[in-house]
Amino acid sequence: MNTCKTALRVIWAHKFYLLLYLVGMSLIMIVIGSTNMQAAVRANTSSSVGRFEPAQAKIVVIDRDCDNQAGCAMGQGLEQYLGKSAQLVTVKDEPQALQDANVSGKSDLTVIIPAGYGQRFLDALEDTAAQAHSDGKTPSFPKVETAASYNSSRGSLAQLQVDSYFDALRTALLTGLCQNGSMELHSYAAVKDAATYVVAHYAGNQPHVGIHASPKTDNHGALLKGFVTIVGLAAFPLMTALTVCVATLFGAFSSPDRHRRLLASPVRSSSLNGQELTAALILAGFSWVYYVALVAFSMAASGVSLASLGWGRVLLSFFVMLVFAVSAASFGFMLAQFNPSSSLINSVGVTFGLVVMFTSGSSSGGPLPPVMQTIGKLTPGWWYNTAVQSIMDSSAAGLASWGLPLTVVALFALAYACVGLMVSRLTRTRATLVAPVSSDPSMIG
Image 1 (cartoon, rainbow, N blue to C red):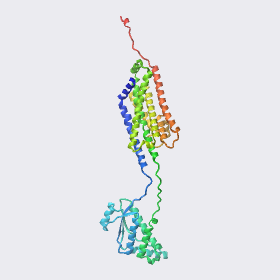
Image 2 (image 1 turned 90 degrees about the vertical axis):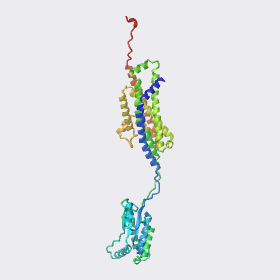
Image 3 (image 1 turned 135 degrees about the vertical axis):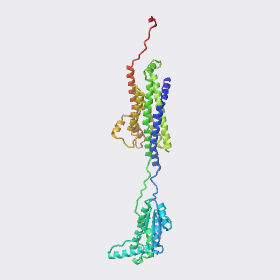
Image 4 (image 1 turned 90 degrees about the horizontal axis):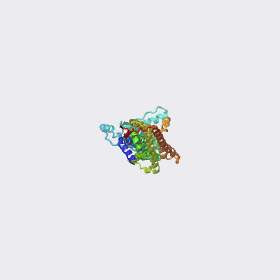
């Protein structure tokens, strides 16, 4: 086990790579994944079923025609009519107070019934009836004074309610819907009955808006997608960190001087290689445990329990991550057999990690272009992300949906290891051990 301990010390001597590629990059990926998860949590907690309550406008009604019975009846009916959909606000009938209420937002709409309005309304009503019999031009009805606040659009919408009230009042008086008589009855009593009728039939004067309360959608799938994103983003830190660290580990043992000393040792080569491989697997297992802990912490911080996603799915997704970590370590082993320099190891590790992340589909919100999918299928990252998505997809049926991608990830690990062993075999076959020339003391004369 001395070789394994030495290999672990080699990894610890290069702990900067672990801090940079594993810890640093994984934290960035977790933050990105947590953003999607928190959005899914907010969508899941919000309910689409509720009581629709439109915003109420604040309206001030000033009736300056209270001295006239008809005008007073119209004003009272208007207040009752608007009170069904708006909030009535009391303000002094003073120009300064009305302006302050309008500008400060205390009122969204100010309605002023001017003095003599009731009588002018009845006169216009009589003229309208007379013109209707003679087919003449219909006179226009007087308008109340309104001032909508510029702070919101509720005042402008409430102004439509004011116009609706007076239109309905005019129709009720002209058609006799509220009285049993003729046009001579357009008096205070007729106006009061008409106002009562309009208020009672308030709902019929409003536009019919159908509100369909759809049942709350099952946003559990959004939580599953958020978990898939967090797990899928592990491809970059795991691939980069394990490639660089494992390649550095095996590169330290493959230098010519160390290689000669290892061959000259009494320990069999298979035992030495097995201990080096054990150190690489320990590193892969440590990286896997670290990222699993980060995922669990991220889910807990987002308020999502892993048990709510299904322990079977979660554990199987973590197992796929472990297989992917082994494939990343195998790629680092293969890279080390080519005896690259330290800078080349870092360059290849980061570049290949980025390729794996961007072609796996975990970093994109939608489907990848066909070219990217083709490139992604040549790396274990695409198959890793596909396996995790298939596991968490509730509509996926059986082992076939995720078993094939998982098998491909394992085959990538085996292929990388086989290529590394083949390159190692070729380099060892061509290498020649140059032994120092020994001199026989008896020949020294």
